[in-house]
Length: 206
Image 1 (cartoon, rainbow, N blue to C red):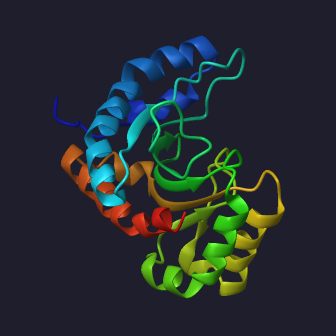
Image 2 (image 1 turned 45 degrees about the vertical axis):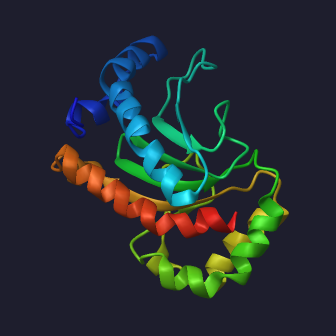
């Protein structure tokens, strides 16, 4: 199939009450698209990073009561998992499509990476577009716009990664749902590809 893009119906999956009902529609409508994007971008990211990258589509298998509020495909250089590794994500919340480079709480090298980010803040400021966003928590939809952050605020994020056990760092792009649903599949693929090009230096620092 050619990638069809995302629809109102995809985003509205997260309004459905109940774990089973929401998962049924998520599996039906969204997961095939994440599978497609995973298989499409794994070779691209492998070439860009120099590491063989494997796609991991979220299964939400441990959930027994609460339905997921977001879903994603992650890319890491390990077939078995991604949470302990620097990785990339493409996914949906009800409000937006997201593309991330991420180092989350399970990663063992957060302290070293935080120090590396601090040392490279000038290069990061130059290379990451001002409309990109940063987050310190992958479980929340909110994020901070790069252009709104002072150097002190950015350094505080990097320092927190070194000092707080559950700290995380994510950088990437949010595409509001109202914009995403107007884009065809080719436009979304192109935007995702462009975003990854900007995020590769953050991966290589890790």
